[in-house]
Image 1: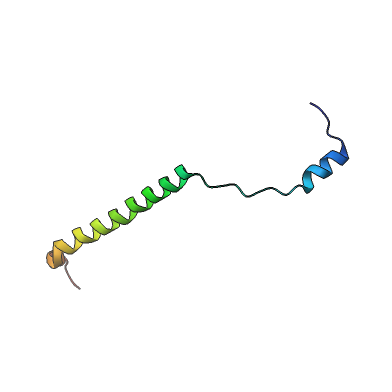
Image 2 (image 1 turned 90 degrees about the vertical axis):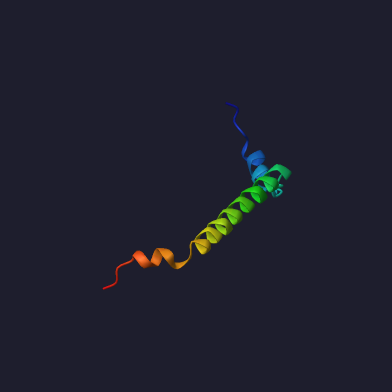
Length: 62
């Protein structure tokens, strides 16, 4: 392995790094996953609302 001189190492460590850019594919992936989660929660809510309180009749109270 090549050794880095201390001055070069110091200059390298002082360089400002630009923030990484978010790619278009990552944005599309997150939007699709978010839509999938929201739609699954919505349809689960709709399913439980359509069942109504009929499931509560089987619960035995104290």
